[in-house]
Image 1 (spheres, rainbow, N blue to C red):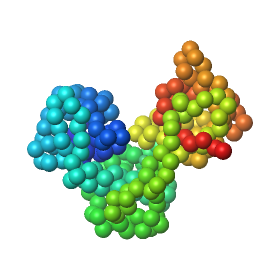
Image 2 (image 1 turned 60 degrees about the horizontal axis):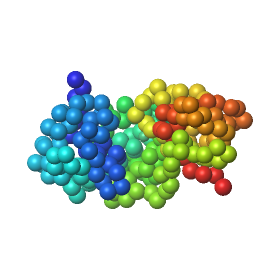
Image 3 (image 1 turned 90 degrees about the vertical axis):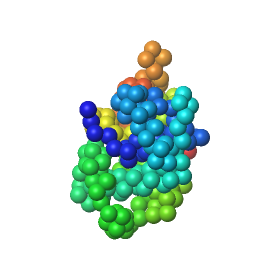
Image 4 (image 1 turned 120 degrees about the vertical axis):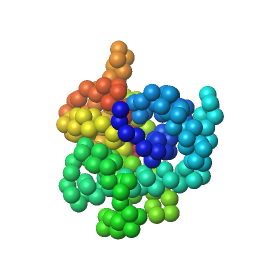
Length: 219
Ligand SMILES: [Zn+2]
């Protein structure tokens, strides 16, 4: 059984809640790869501590203090990731796990110094926005999944899912990185896979891989 902290729950709720800020317990369980019962236990605890509004069978929502807490954890995580990538030189598929271990222990002062050293960055190595000291996020396009792009359209990568290193290694291998331009040539009805053009090379991408790459249209 992996040791999952309160912070991890709050971060997942913060990152995965819908546009109303709500998320269901079974979605949290799926995201974290743990049992719904374990999630329910933790949500009760977090609710008692004032971090979430939890009602059985209903969506869970962060309270104001829960949101502040989660936003700060996400900020720490993303600054660490960028620091490890830019300064230490770790590849983008290695920084998530390292940052996860470091984000809990660093002082606010250290995080602020790292942010300054990185020249107040807006995005982490995977294209995720970094909240500033006051919790403000950069205004930018969060993008749509590549799997939703119609044939004939040219798009640019602005964000990729960061939690699975084999996924990141795979997309690196086929030439995908942030800001890379991709043209969708064809979608295959049989399995929803995509035939795309990357650097004038045709590549087939599964629907699951495409669903984890976020893009915006290139005009
Ligand atoms: Zn990241």
